Length: 125
Image 1 (cartoon, rainbow, N blue to C red):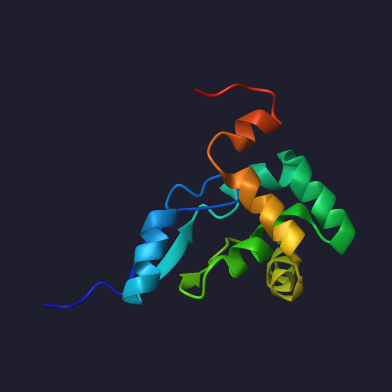
Image 2: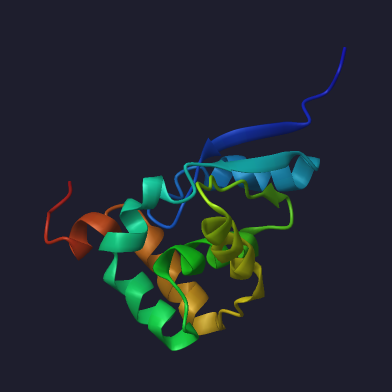
């Protein structure tokens, strides 16, 4: 019997519900692949926090989202899609962005359940 080498779950700046699975993967040395890391770009356009942080880093919001995901765990693999060389270069540049603790914490807090809905003025139960 072979072992499980990796899993892929939904995880991005608006959805960290798979954190317990990621924690287990860390403890068992299983690679965790982020599914839907940018929510097809919706988060990069809509989330004001990412825009604010991106402006401070002279970057795009999507780059901030990817930079944050790169900091989540050493057990993760990030495979963002790309449609052009320019887009690939932007994705690659995400690895050079140094988010500080305040940025990292703010994004994590915004990713907690209900935070994105609150950001758009919607209520959650």
